[in-house]
Image (cartoon, rainbow, N blue to C red; front, side, top):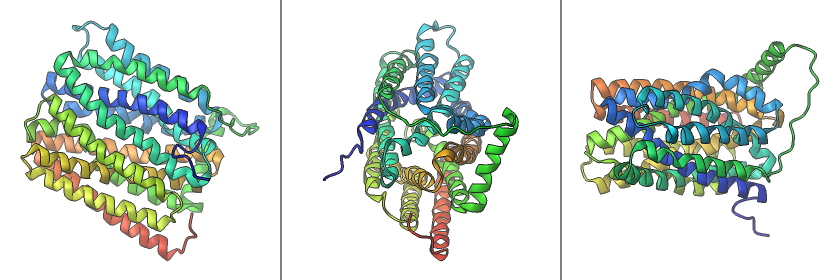
Length: 411
């Protein structure tokens, strides 16, 4: 019997809901950064948007991981979507043009990122309850394909909306997309977390849970620690690029919001192609999957360097497809490995630990490359991001050799 490409009825609902909400995210991402850069003219201040989106996962990640493992995931997912609908959708609609300042926008972005910090790990931790074990990487890749669709469609719509209306009005579309996502979770059946009777206090039990996952990730399954280090290298460069790309495109290629939206959509095309290709890698062993990451990051690194010297926007579009494809391999593969290695009652904490490391590196990369753009120029930032991707590829190659030498059984 042929396996359905959306894996299961429950996953099908989740996929459609995420497709809609990711389009909304793609619309708002360009609108947020464009608004800040248009008002301030500062690449460093534009990166504050990205920084605010990474602070909550870093500061609250471990506690969020404990909550995800202890509480039902469906209410966490639905509640997060509803909060995001109000914070980044309805509230900007209700504010007057005069009161919609950069500082107030920063506050809304921070509140939205708190809700997103709960939603992301909760959704990833819920995958083992929705699809079978051999389908974990495929499910993660399909979820990333919704991000790709958001990147393809969202920025193009956002660019047209900014040109015709304003960044503030464009943000209003997000409210509806998040509410649709929340509605899609309602029929999905998720098994409740295992109840563990505790006699110690809330603080002691939380610390105990965190010590348990740290010991597991470092001593019992060091592959998780190695994955976290590799992901941190990757996000140091990739998060800076995704945050600063509107600035790069405007300064290096002299593009307006519509052209930037189309070019960013080309990035999404590459991301989508790799996401769909990764569906077939679910049953590959650890070493083969890591080699995919090595190849993908190498390609994106070369394309990033080439982007500095390109003046033709069509050639830049081709390079953006390659960059999107190269950057699309690591996350679904890493999440799939984590979901396979970690017991179900610990997945939320393990993902939170992984995300905390990756997001800490991301915030450093966004600040560093934002500072580099402002003081040395956008060209050097793009070159630096390309070098970081090459370093990630080298680390992935070392990881693959280490996995081979340990003779780890296929996952």
